Length: 364
Image 1: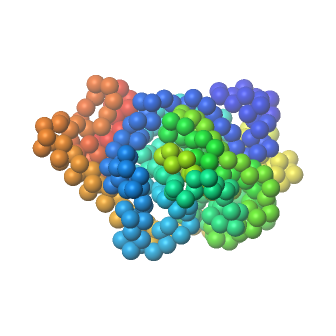
Image 2: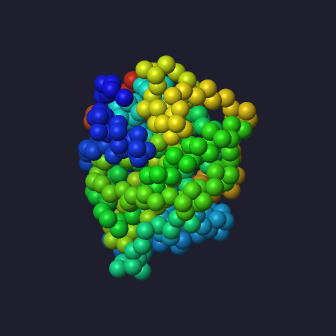
């Protein structure tokens, strides 16, 4: 597709069309990464200098946060909850422009539901992985994102899968995301064949992973951002290096469903890639089922308990700092400050019209 894009090159577009993902380099620096990572060790209840504390099962016991919390993931990998939101247009404009290139422009994005957060996917590894690293098993843990909605070919909830790297570097065998670069095409075809919609468990991702061949281990440096087609089959991998790996997966939500019968010049790259997978020039997709949000009750109750546990740790940490005479201010950047009892407030949200444009948390 010969168009002018803000970030993507012709090579990037061709690569995305074939593999379903692209990596955009140098999207942000230390300032933003350190802001996202602020207090993460406090939130986890761990000592960054003492690996004996790096045990999620000990810090977040399943009986406290709900059964099945760790069954699907790599041991010693945890997705934390979030306390703050960030506008990617301000903090990672290069990555955001690439997202817009892929979905057909910012005007198609639901910005309110597409903010980045400090929810982190933390992979600390285990000693037994050292010198015993193996690629992820296709029969376990591979998935596509979106366990909270009924999946259709044109779903708005997950317009892209975005993965920023906040660690200084994710090296080979360092817990990088594993992607089946040929698996997404099978998911696309399955959804096209099932216009009634499919529950996440009915996508048979394990079967797709086991019949896929092109497994990629994504490595990169701080500021690199992996952007994937929404049907990308992926999983975590073992961190044999035990260098803490911090990433997250901010959602890109769309205002309207993907539309595969637009005039060719109006098709987004995601829509065009989907059509390519189906071998079609145009496709008048019409869902026959109702669009339904799914509420995995135990998961969300577990997440809320985790959030409260993290906030308890943060409050205790900052209360101790205040006792020691350390000033505690609201989290913001540059000259803008909002006084809070603790730096996250009771209801973190984005304030409009902040003087520096990047005030990220305040209490009501």
